[in-house]
Amino acid sequence: MTRSEMLIYFRELYGLSSHTNDGKLDDEIDIYFNLAQDQIIEENLIENNDMLIRSIKGNLKSHNVINSLLVKSDSLTLSSDAEFANVFLADIPSSAVILVRYVLQGRCQLTRNLTNPVQGWYGTKTIATVDIDKYVYNGNNNPYLASPLLTFTGGKMAFIINNEDVLNDAKVEYIKEPVAIGSVIATVVQDCELHVSVHKELVNKAVNIALKSSSIEPFQKIGVELQENKQ
Image (cartoon, rainbow, N blue to C red; front, top):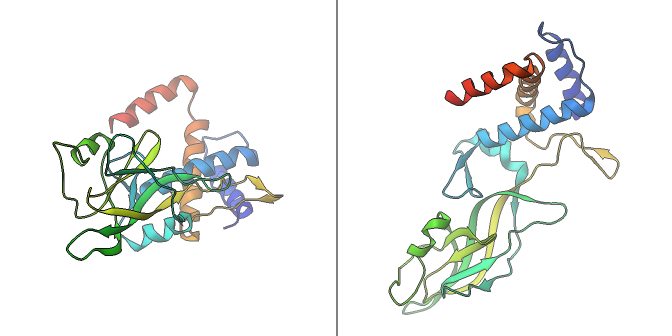
């Protein structure tokens, strides 16, 4: 659906409720659309070890829903960490147009210093920031990593490799922030970027959010929120 069609469908559903007597402006409905869009994104992801890292649920529907938000970065600019010899840092890839919501996975091109050095690309495994000390090289710790690791520290992405390996290149695949439904970019009013198969679901969720905010008196909302948190 286009944003205009979503507005029509929203008003039809919203008007069916006997609990509402307030009209909604387009800008107000856009807020509900974007809140519902966020809900759908989260429902199709799995939380990993770090707040900034997610995985897509392992089914075709979830991949279809999220696919339009997937971005593969170019090669990252890497710098050696000042404290740890086997840790390399990179800025989270973003621009004025594309912002990162979640990182899915990294890829590292390594030269592995075995008997015959081999260069190749390896997918990263993600770890929680608090676990970084387990995998860093120092005089008392020299772990062997079958795969390079990815985490976040100091506002940057951190790639961790074996101390004997050489990191030649690194990239990440990530979920970008969706363009806000109803926002205007270069005179064009933005439609929903998510797959068309979830547009009706998105409108239904937006209506539910609107009904909750419209049909409950302010002093009652606290009780409802507390009840929901208990579930």
